[in-house]
Each structure stands twice: as structure tokens, then as C-alpha cells.
Amino acid sequence: MHLTLAVPFSVAAVAICLTAPAAAGDECSVLSPATDRLETVLDSVSPSGTPPYVAGQIRKALSPLYALRSPAAIDLRIRSDMLATQVDNSDPYRPASPELPVSDLVKATQLLAAAREYCAPR
Image (tube, rainbow, N blue to C red; front, side):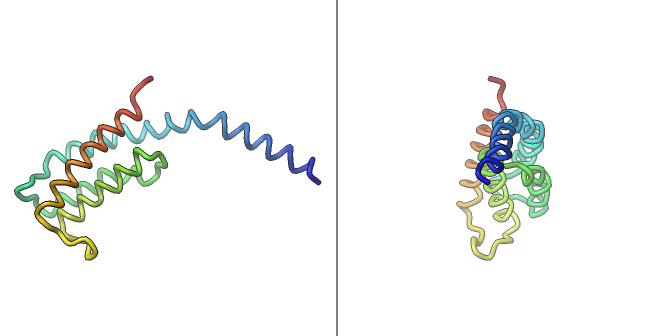
């Protein structure tokens, strides 16, 4: 019984090890264009006030990130969504305040750079 289970598990382990580096490249084929679109939208966010419709543009730009699993993509998605909820004041558990959009924008911009670094050729 142990021998019959060892072979499939060994094959699965080898397959995972061989596809792991390719997964990062596959993610970058989605992550890189998404960062470009997101950067364009983030440039329209202003500390002095941003129209609520920009929140929808942020969410649309970050939507491809939901399919990704890298920490760079996940962190960027979460922080960008937090910024969107500040722009349209749609999170009842994190009400909009003057300082939160500024800090969210700074952090989202930093995470944008981190995502690009993650996908940079090595």
C-alpha cells in the first residue's frame, strides 16, 4: 500500500517543482499589464479629493489580480481595493477620512513598484 502511494506522490512533487518557476512568468504576463493600467488610474487620485467614479476605475484595473497568487499581486490588490473604498466611502468598517486615502495611495504606489520588481527580468 505504501509503495503504490509513493509513486503518484513522487510524480506530483516533481511536477510541482518543475512548474513553479513557470508560474511566476505566467503571473507576470498578467501582473505587468495590470500594473500599467492601475498606475494610470492611481495618477488620477488626488489628496485634495477624487471623484467617486475613480473607485470603479481602480477596481476595474486591479480585477486581473484576483486570479494571481504571488504576494506582490495579492498585496497590490488588497491595498488598491482599500484605496478604492476610501475614494467612494464604500466600506462601513473603514469609514473614509482625510488621511487614509493619502496613506493608501502612497502604499499602493510602493506596492506597484514592488510588483514591477517582482516581474523584472533577472
